[in-house]
Length: 376
Image (tube, rainbow, N blue to C red; front, side, top):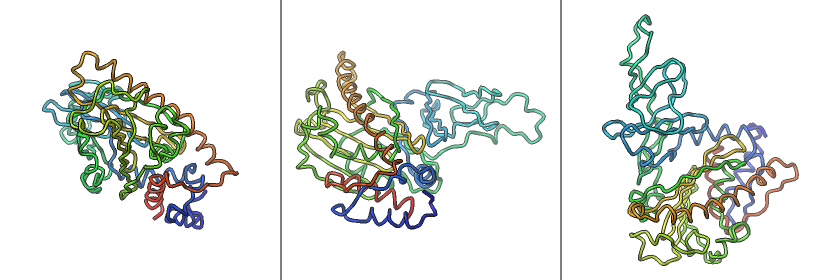
C-alpha cells in the first residue's frame, strides 16, 4: 500500500473515528506496510519519551547498559559522582559502538581505533591524532541524548524539542503513583521476540477479550462482565478490576506490597503509556512490558518483574519470586504463539477486518491515537 493512496488513508481515519459500537478492526496494510513502519519510526519512536531501563540496572558508579531503539544504539552510564547520562552509542571517529550489553568500567574504549571516553561522554584518549590540524579532544564527546527519570524508570528522547517527560506521563503517572515503583526493585527481566508488528503486541496486552480463550490459567479468575475502562488521552487506559495474583494457584508466595496491604486479595490494575509501556499491577507485585519495534513484522518484548525492596532480604526470595517469573513466562508464550497469526492475516488478500467488541475499548483507543499520529 502506498502512502499516496489518500482514499485508503481517509477510510482508515474514518474507521478509528467511529464510535466503538460501530467500529471495525483496521486493514492489514496498516500493520504490514514497510512505508507505514518507517513513518512510525519517524513520527513516533524518534519523537516520544521511551522507557529504556530501571535505575538499578546502572546502580553503581561505572555501571553502563545499552539498548537499540529503532536501529539507534543507545548507551546509559552512571559516572563517579552517581549521575546518570544517556548518549548515542557511537564513537565520534567512525561510529563504531562503544559498548554492548551491560557492565562496569572507568573508561569506554572503541574496539576499532582505540578512542576512549569517560563516563560523562568526554573524549579521554585518541592515539595518533597529533598531526590532525585543529584536533581538540576537549571539544569532542559522545552525543548526549535527553533523558529523565520517573519512579525509578529511565526514559530517553531523540527529539530535543519534545515536551518534558512530566507532560508526556500525564495521567499515567497520577494513576499509578500508588504502586510506588520507586520503592521496588527488579527481580527479573525477561526478553522475547514476537513475530508481529509492534502495534499488534501493544493491542494484545491491552485486550482482555482474549483472556479466557487463550489464558485459561488466569482468565477464568477475572469477572470480565464487570470490566470497565477509563480511557486516557494519547491512546492510554487505566483499569482496576478483581482477579488473583499471577501465580499458578492464585496464591501470594511473597505476601502483599506493604503499601497495598489494605487492598482486597484480588486487587488488580492495568495501564498503558504510548507508545510502548504496559503496566500490570497486583496487590503483591507488578510487571511491566516494553515493546520495541525491530521491523514491520518483528517486536522485542521485555518484561520487568518488580517487588518491594524489603522482600529481597528474605532468604527464600529467589525461590518464591521464581513462581511469578515462570508463570508470566508461560503466559507470554501463549501470547507469542498467536500473534504471528495476526501478522499473517495482515498480509492475506482474504483478510477482512471484523467488528470490535466492547472488551476491545482500549485497543480502539490505541488505534485512534496511532492513526492520528501517523496520518492526522
